[in-house]
Length: 196
Image 1 (tube, rainbow, N blue to C red):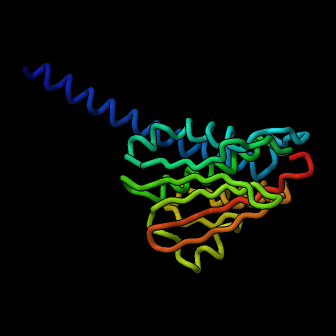
Image 2: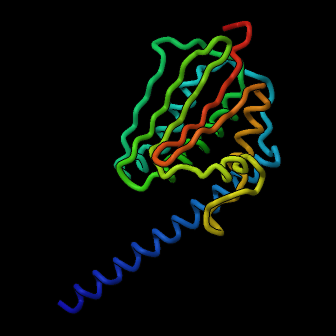
Image 3: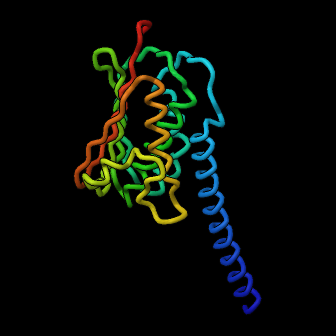
């Protein structure tokens, strides 16, 4: 029995160490990703035709386990048909990655993540809404500034939403945030161009 207990204890320690290493690697990779993006390390070339919802689905697939583990209800409202637009698809994936990640982090457990995509005149609008605690007005005014973060030291680079804003600007689009306790919505407006 003593040997079994030692083995169980060692396995528990190994599991804890693995989780700590995994968390550290995840944090480091997020910072490197943010810094590379901020420095335009991976600079995309030409615009390409892409369907916006395909990039969003790629990001949701990446976060599938986190959404499931936190018991978050995912609500998707996409139009039945959506034509491809000229854009920088890889850079838009960075936008969706940051916004979805922030939405997931804003909710503890059993929240609702709603993603709506619709056409509004000459724009495609992507609205990402979470049922988290909300963002105070004074913070809403600063969240797109470089290096501004509300996360504990070592957890956030403060570059995510600045990168999002710069990518949206590059697309001649705009981004807006509306927040109240229990609901925050980020809306990204992307021009569809003449070929829509």
